[in-house]
Image (cartoon, rainbow, N blue to C red; front, side, top):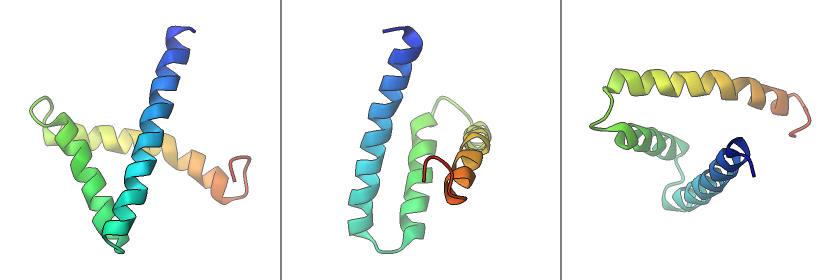
Length: 81
């Protein structure tokens, strides 16, 4: 396995775990905003002490720029839908 393939496998394991956590969070509160905010807090906590909050926010914005087109395609009936 190449390093790039290993990185992707690591990402897929982390993504699967994150989706498990989201499913568990939905059972804790029916309000979507509670889960959204808690997940964003988790990202800030992940970087706490190593990056300023403004940098963490820019990282989140960068990830969103990558993810939004993927989900726009899925919402329009693209191959992932």
